[in-house]
Structures are given as structure tokens and as C-alpha cells.
Length: 147
Image 1 (cartoon, rainbow, N blue to C red):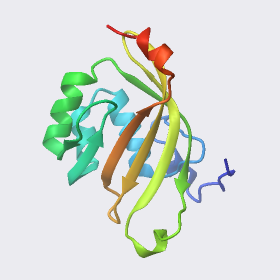
Image 2: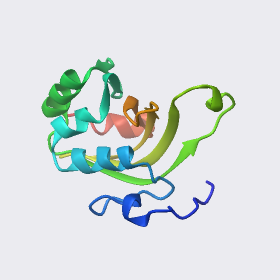
Image 3: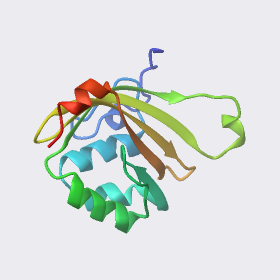
Image 4: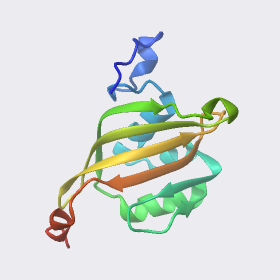
């Protein structure tokens, strides 16, 4: 991964101790901070009105209210442990008003810990249009995690 340049305003590069190597986007830092505090209402407010959360192996959850309800029901006791990330720069990015980010890390649940990646797409207002969670585990590992 590319080494990120120092953030021009270091006080904005972390939020209450949440720091992710390569990520200085405040919305993404706030997502992890609010989620880990169990404040799913605040987490959902970071999404655009019709923003989407795509959990692994489940249907996409659309809209702030539905995202808050989903997280309240399904994410109690989860701790997100992001490690590093990067802003995606792909051909055509200059032609659209969205920015893509990839974050790698782990999710610690009450039952197990698993490696994951998060893909975030932010609109020009810095709201989350899509947060997609991908498990980075082999099928054999997942079979041992059944409840």
C-alpha cells in the first residue's frame, strides 16, 4: 500500500483515539467510533438518506432508519478493529462525485474474531452511499464459526 502523506490537520486524522493507517476521512473514522460505542443511531446518521449497508451473506439494508434497526438487532457486542486503508483511485473517479475507500481489519464478535474488509463509497457531502463488509476468511474457517 502507498504511504499516506501526513494529514494537514492532525487533530482531524483521529477521532477519540480511532486512527486508521492511510485513512484521514473524518466520516469513516466517525463510523468506526460510533459503531464501537454501540451508538448505532449515530452510525446510521453518517449514511445518505438512501445509503446502503451490505453485510456479508445478507440482503442490502437501505436507509438510515433501517440501518440503525439492523445494527441494533445484529451488531450488539461487535467491536470493529480497522488496521489500514486507502482511498481508491480508479479511472473515471474525476468524473463522478463519489469517493471510494477500502479499509482492512478484523471484527471481534462475542463468539469469534474474523478478518474483514470494508468498502466505503462517500458522496460529495461526505455521506456514506455504501458500506460493504466482506469476510476475508476461508470456507474452512467459517465452518468452525457456526453458532
